[in-house]
Image (cartoon, rainbow, N blue to C red; front, top):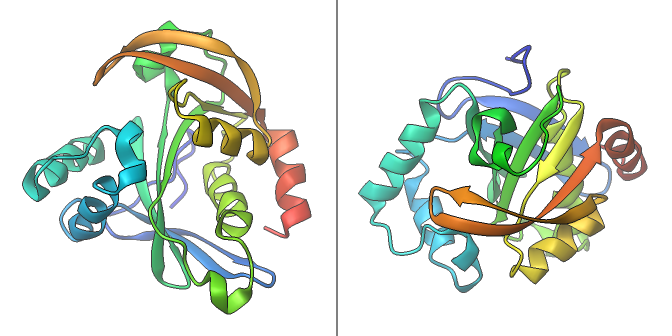
Length: 208
């Protein structure tokens, strides 16, 4: 079901979005189930490249409780994206005005914040495509699925060079370094924006 604010809503585990990418298969997004999906999440957040996600070392019970809290918030939602049924990326979308990042920039109507963490590569060998070539547009398509979204906002840690390179490849325009208090403590981040019109052009080129 499409929430008429800016986020897709549904029951835990419910599929809320689907797209077929030509030559790359089917992507679906399900509302994250903090109980049923905890094994997948626990594996992902403890991988070497997950340091900036800030959840390494949590027990399964602690991780489940963390996302149960997210699930309780009307302004922050988490989704598990599957590629032909295989979990590949965790996406968190949120209202920036209800998040600590609001202290770092002037939030505009229709802004949606986004965090994404790729945990699996999906069936890349089957289709012969680089994982992010297909996953990236799928993530953008999910983030734009609600009609109230006018601009996407990301704020990766300033030390996370791979995430910054990836957001630029996605089409985001960096707007400088900001500092604010995050749940994990003080954060220095690179703020970047992607207006809906530019994102839609990117999706059209990718066939999403």
